[in-house]
Image 1: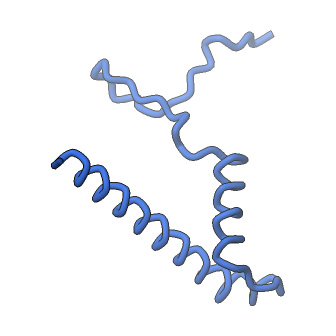
Image 2 (image 1 turned 90 degrees about the horizontal axis):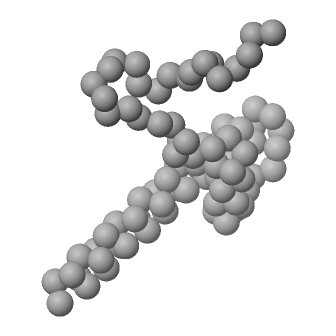
Length: 85
């Protein structure tokens, strides 16, 4: 029974974090972006779609590879496989 309670708790925390994140982006858009660029204000659902679109286009950071071999060159791009010619 404790496992189900933990899963529900984690799900509620994730939902709360997503709502807070959406609310912050929504507030920034409607108070700053709409005034600066003369754009209309957006709804909370449109904020969700905007963040989802940005994650698809720009990536969500999941593609960053971390090396655990002890070197200090984390998050670097290797161009060894590219031909200079």
